[in-house]
Length: 317
Image 1 (tube, helix red, strand yellow):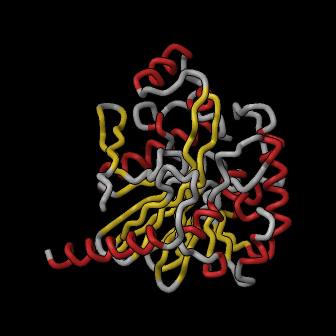
Image 2 (cartoon, rainbow, N blue to C red):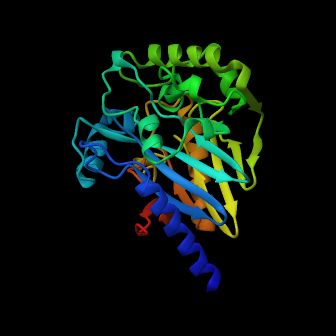
């Protein structure tokens, strides 16, 4: 009981610090960061904003009527809606780790509601120069673009380590888009962003094959599927656990884990990896955070017949 009280007090202190460091701008009408502790590991979920996309992208292999019924049941518009974009800051063992970097800025795609990571890190009192490591779940532009914003690289540490699966870097040398279902313009933008990212940060990349411990209790593990080198980040400390699943799990993936997302380069493998992860999380009751789940995207997974159910946590004030 004393340990539980101490963890609760520490979490509250952590959240107070995050909430009062920097003031929201006049247009910040929603919360954009949420702090929690996983044992001795500090975690801050940060919203990069939202990405408006066609609803077909949620499940291009589903019957239109079935997909429309799901959207209606979820009180979502039938044609397009805003996908959340979340990144995570982790502090463990004296390291400050940024997991993914958000969209950054791509004016050609007209996405003004995304690309907020740098601004929101500053509002949370996190200096870019304090970041010791970056972990990339994969190299899609909404995960690496924040590092390509003008002026950002100059503010980062010269010894910054960027951890990414070797299979991911290899894939983007000649990416295969034959099985995706993306809106026009996205494949070209993804190729260009990945190429530019490799050019800008090649010397700071730290490649791993299947698994790598970035800091005490912070392990990045290749899952594949969404892209060949797509990875998830597993946190474990003091009996607490949390997985940042990147793009392996979407809002529709609980009730319909077999539905194919339009950004998946290997849809069948992505579905297999998603189902395997959701089964594991349901069994061990650990927390889940994912890039495109509604902010703050912190919750549990429950088994629901042959599928799953998303159980958001109660916000802890």
